[in-house]
Amino acid sequence: MSSPRGESAAVAGPVKGGPRRGRVRGRGRTGARRGVPLPLLLPALVGLVFLILPLLALLIRAPWRSLPDQLTSHEVWQALQLSLLCATAATAVSLVVGVPLAWLLARVEFRGRGLVRALVTLPLVLPPVVGGVALLMALGRNGVVGKWLDDWFGVTLPFTTAGVIVAEAFVAMPFLVISVEGTLRAADPRYEEAAATLGASRFTAFRRVTLPLIAPGVAAGAVLAWARALGEFGATITFAGNFPGRTQTMPLAVYLALQSDPAAAISLSLVLLAVSVAVLAGLRDRWMTTS
Image (tube, rainbow, N blue to C red; front, side, top):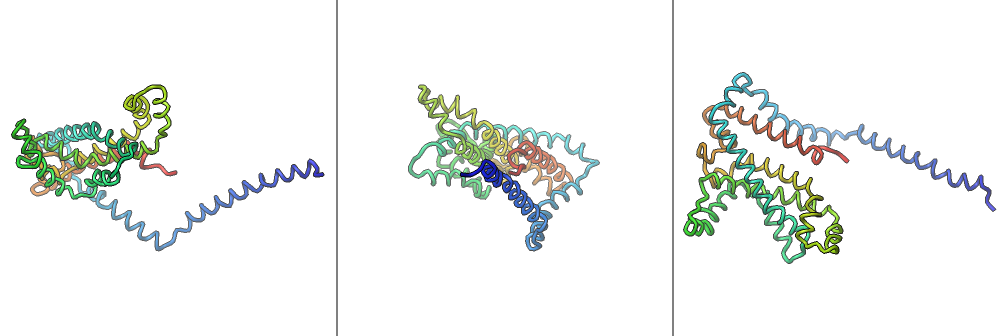
């Protein structure tokens, strides 16, 4: 028969050993952090310098004295207002059609879903100029769909402000779809099933249950899409052209100023850099935390 003291020792043994093993693991992690292999450290530092140096050079060469005058010029404010308007409109379009598309890819099993997902994400890797040419072939005056839009409704998209919105939505929507689809896959579908058992339709369950659950993912995707739309250049200049006050957004104004006034191009670039930093700061909980 075992004594109570023996049982106490048997119980206390694992308890004493547990923290000891935890401390060993902790020392292992600390040692791994201190002992960084030189073949990994040097390329890592080169990569860090490679990414940071151009941004530092932009700040060093910025014309800080003349910056207020350049940023308050009529042309700059015109391009900035147009950029903000078009990026916001493109994000709204992406939300209206992108969130249902993400839900379809995440919640509905159908044949060819992998192919559809690949086509949706294709604009992420497609060169923007190619995207602009594709939009011209589809929505231009002689395009596959644009011809009918012009003949039946008198709607012409190329080289208009609406064309800028279309081009920006084309390249920005995949960011929203990917973000929302990932959030939907992480959300527990049993909440939707519980709502269905209570008599809610699938759309009501999505509107009342799913959408509030995935709201942070939708917001993050919308911010990413907005930032991508704001910085779009290739598809915009190919599909909508570069007309001041109508299609000339901030990236196009930077490109045009770089040919004649590099100081103005740097000033405009600083505005876009500040917007990018603000977006990154807004997404700090998603992109700047470690587990």
